[in-house]
Amino acid sequence: MAMANSLRYAVPFPIKASSKQPALQLPGVGACAAQHTLPSLKFTARPSFSSPPVVVAAASSTVEAELQSEAASPAKVLPFRVGHGFDLHRLEPGYPLIIGGINIPHDRGCEAHSDGDVLLHCVVDAILGALGLPDIGQIFPDTDPKWKGAASSVFMKEAVRLMHEAGYELGNLDATLILQRPKLSPHKEAIRANLCKLIGADPSVVNLKAKTHEKVDSLGENRSIAAHTVVLLMKK
Ligand SMILES: [Zn+2]
Image 1: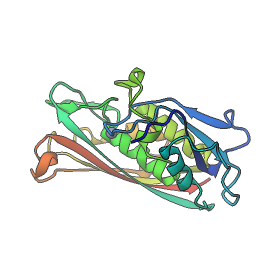
Image 2: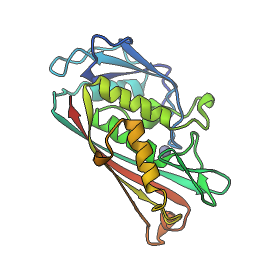
Image 3: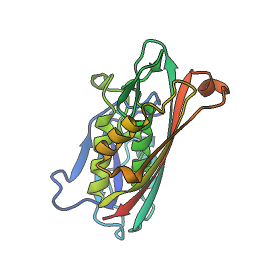
């Protein structure tokens, strides 16, 4: 992927006038093992859904041009927005297994630039997707060494902040974790409770499921872990 010194992306929702930061400057954070190489990202707010997108600075790279092209598509004011997230991490001995911010005892964990929290990464991607924003790897690129081992709650808090700034709140969330071992049933409620806390949502709208991969492929051989999430956001 081409490198971009400064990536600008028109946010497809109005930023409130009270916002302290008219142009968001997000920190470079390595969230996933995904190979995204964009060192910084600037959001430029559009005045409203019904208005034409703000014309941002002239493209200085292929990536910037591509994202500007994406952002140029008309956005609508929607009462609901649906987002899907997927994430997968390799499991390796010598790493902690952190799921939904909870440390799960296991003989291996996720090898990743951050803490490798497959569930939080997946939920962040679902929220960003619902908002029509780039994925977690683009918003939090893994090129900044200061974020190595960072808690993924940082990404969650930023995604939730962006959701509220866009004028949305969580309708409901449904997540599925896929792993062969360990059994998650003793930890599911702790994971769900922490997820609710991070999102600021009532437990009744946050559902968490876990299943094995029937001993098939890396997921079924205790060599990887994956998660899917669907979120419904509702206009406040
Ligand atoms: Zn991840």
